[in-house]
Length: 304
Image (cartoon, rainbow, N blue to C red; front, side, top):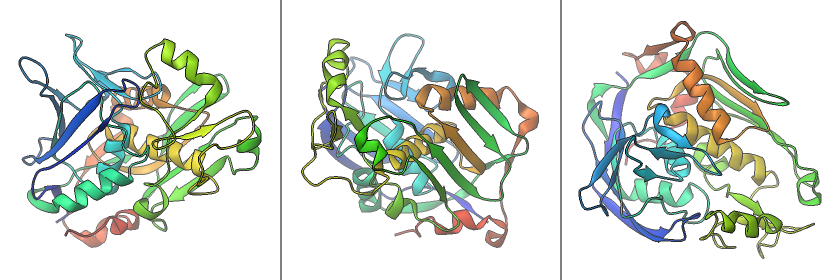
């Protein structure tokens, strides 16, 4: 049987929030079967627990942020969620000492390192997948996202920026996880932003912690980071990384194909909400025989 996964032991790291600029300590702890992924704000007078849930993503300005009915927030969760998805982790408790997950280097790679350092163990409960049975999509002008039936997991995204740095890069990429490794080909892609947007972002309390160490920064023509890009198509690969994290807020891996054009956190979340409102479009499945699992999931790294 394909089983759920959690961490072998707790592990911590310290960093800064991309948007808040605040220093934050992150601690990842093992969690019981079927508990899912939960965030705990330990800096508050009384700790507040927030479960990863598409219906709690109530702020999507440049990131995915969980917001409770009382206004307690945990922001920029998508890179960490993407790492959980990439390693097939079902259950974990995430403690944070601020309202935002640390940005680290702007990718999911530091979180992959943390999780692998903690070790990953199987639990005595079947892993549950969401299998897409019918197309579900969200369209907003020339932007769109959709989930479709597919015997595996595949992500296709395209972006459109009329800018020299982007025109020198591929703006459409497909990652089929039957043939590609999340760790090697997705996890290292960093978030990006434009110099001309920085002043506006900071006036709205966003991007206060951003710099060349944790983002790809672009001026009117070039990438400003001394080492350049990690992939020729790093911009769109990061969008794929984000989408995987946004989708994993639903709590289970997808058996299906996700695609989008000029999409972002808001549309990704709207797609999850649309899916939940369309019960005939999906089903929850588990696998007794590992050979029955689509090959996309055979590439998830083995346990430590």
